[in-house]
Image 1 (cartoon, one colour):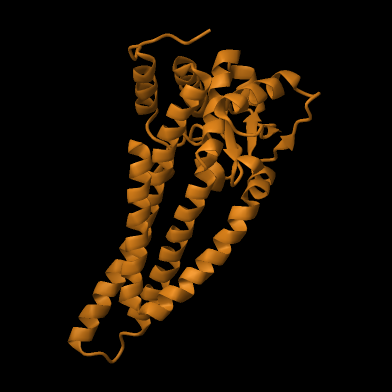
Image 2 (tube, rainbow, N blue to C red):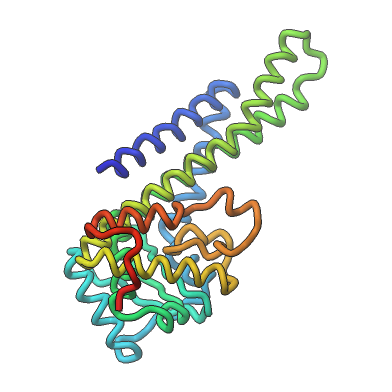
Length: 290
């Protein structure tokens, strides 16, 4: 409930930011960029699963190719009270997984070859349950709404920058001061929108951890899996598109020493494990499950 409330507050902050920029530009500009963002995200929302799966090189697995994995997904889907999603395999060495689909009827779960090789059955069940939680909680819908608002803010801010820079010639001192304030808003707003969007993503990860642990009934297994996956991501470079990083259960670029880590789409691993251990009623120094 706490994470749901946090998501609502953050979405409200994005909406308020968009309205504020629209007020600085004038209402007509806000409507224009809002429509453009809506069209872009409408396409992304309805076809995002196909786009992301193709970008990741994922291949759908027939039931006879991996019956044990299909049975695991089927059992956990029943526990989550959602339809069984399609199952995909990504030929990637790094151990990771993600879910996509705008609603439970269009869900898909993708696992890498690395995660199948690394985790034991209990840990993999925990990961699958986490991904099913994303589908059950309609996180793709929430992410799409956040992306729509953030995109609209970015477009509006760019237009405001243009107006402030090229529309200031010949103005008196008061007008130039107003233009300077508008330029400052235009520069800060996209960064603020990105930070709020990342906050929403991290909040949904916490929620999926909790929901997934309840679906599998095994918080310790998910905590153990997250530790292994995080260490694996630090050792094995990811061969995935940066735009898809937020979808994976752990940050695929966790081992990189880049600015990207300052804007991580995932909460700190220690915090995720700490919450799961609290849910299981165990201390933080619990050993890996077997």
